[in-house]
Length: 223
Image 1 (tube, rainbow, N blue to C red):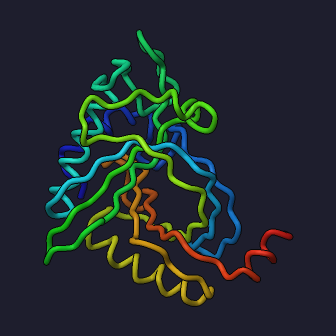
Image 2: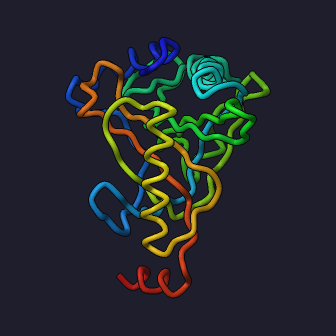
């Protein structure tokens, strides 16, 4: 289930309904291949704000989220309030937060580890405007550009939890293997909906960056 620390995030996402209808701006990508709940996507580079914390999945997520939430509510050099819903007009700067919130394990230590969390910045801070994103006042919160990549994704519904992510990761690894792809790095998980959305209608994803065989890449480039 979703911890209470996500409550402010879900309040500002209140435009989402109990059946998963979303109005939040989402990161653009190109779908290369679809097979049921699985997709191979192409992402261009994009700007994120991120931080890292230690502990269990839930503990680290709580620490990370609080820091990032402070950033989007004014703890940045421009003192800009950054909304997660689109559009919201504010006194200083109007910024639309982009879904989803992404979580990734960066180190394992026997049941505990370190996890990074990213908020994807909206379109007005992408591309040529990436340098306009306000810097964080907290030195542990940083801005970075995620390089362009090919990503294998499995979409699933239900409650997003550490156990669910582990189960879906195994299924995604199997599909990646069947497709002749090579997973890179660690799995990332993403949630798109507030907790009052009926679990069956929730959109969750697990994803791996993948390396594509050069011949396969040439073939896909011709499509």
